[in-house]
Amino acid sequence: MRFIYLLFLATSLCTIGFSQIQQGAILIGGNLSYNGQNSSTEFFSNNTFNTSDIKTNMVTIRPQIGFFTSNNDLLGISINYEYNFLEQTQTFGDQSFSTEEKTNVILFEIF
Image (cartoon, rainbow, N blue to C red; front, side, top):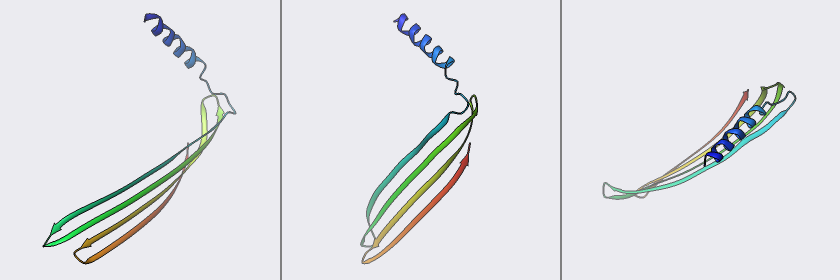
């Protein structure tokens, strides 16, 4: 067991020693995410049966690109796009109300 710990320590130290990123290297990365949710609530109030339905969707796309100007110094840009959708339907007895909301967001970041 002691040998495994020493081997892990030696490997970690060697990796840290050679983890210098050279000038001219390019960083390409990003993030893509999706979140969706549906909920429904039913309740009885004032002698009527009522419902509330909510549907939400969110999509996020975030590509990144960077350039190492010198050893370990990075200059890059990230574009963050986010789309949100919300739909809500409420029913009170025999009356129904529906709302819908869409949002688009674009952010630029320099790092």
